Image (cartoon, rainbow, N blue to C red):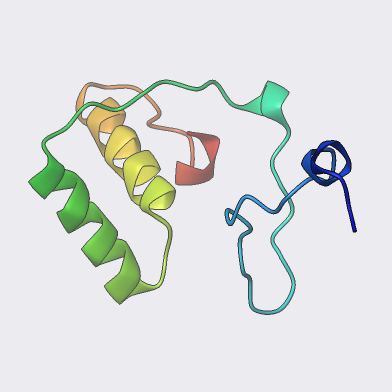
Length: 85
C-alpha cells in the first residue's frame, strides 16, 4: 500500500500536452520576436481561427499579414517582405 504522502509526491500529467502530426516546426528565437496581446471581440478571433483553419495556415501568420498590410498602407515596409514583420 502507498502512503498518501508518497502518492502526493508523484507528478501527474496536466492534460495540456500538444499532439502533433509529424515533425514539429522549429520554435523561433524569443529574442527575434516581441510579444503583445491582441484584444478583439470573440467573434473576430473565432473568424480568424476559422480562416486559418480553412487556409491551413496559423492565426499568427494572418496577424502578421494584417500588420504588414497596415504598415505598407502607411508608407512603411515598402522595400521589405512579409517575413520581415
